[in-house]
Length: 293
Image (tube, rainbow, N blue to C red; front, side, top):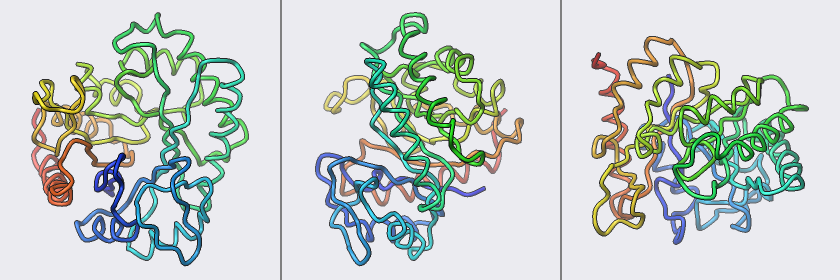
């Protein structure tokens, strides 16, 4: 079982000052084996011989073979690429997203991975019922099925479960499965956001294991600090929040599922990110030693 992380765990979305190669080296030195890359439109690109001064790159416009070489030179493997361009407001946007996501799947061979993690877009407001989001979930299903139509059979999509998106709850996911019958249209089981949404996310492992392609080990606090940047969502290092990780470990052990595993967080001060990422890895390893029943 390999374990990875994301470069965004070491940097800051608004002030990305972690050089790409330095971030890869730090991740490998901490003991991680794989890395998720984020495609960020409009950010710097990487061509052969470049050493970008930031970690978040425009993967779509980069030399992806050069990106892969840099990752592998650090002793890591690209496990997935995050694609964050989902727009579901109209039929034209759905068609454009299906085409764009299909193109992202074509990057996998160049990057040496088999998974694209798309965001799910945004719902009008958080906490809507599955029926209230029925049209959005149907459009999301159309994007996924369209993107997979011409993709090789070994590639899959793992939509990120996220607060304030069309996929926030177990019920939302089950509606998506009904509308997108291809099991390669699956999930990134984002434990932190499931915690924030008070969801029994481990049920997705036990009841729909074929859809769980990635498990994102994130720890969210249900009561964010008063000075938190978001009033509801607060992501911290593993073991410092309220995520019921033991339930997920138990479900995974019972299912014999072998998804990809990623540890990440957002709301850790920049100066403490590297140490927190190391502690999170040690905590994750301890979870598997004696899973609580």
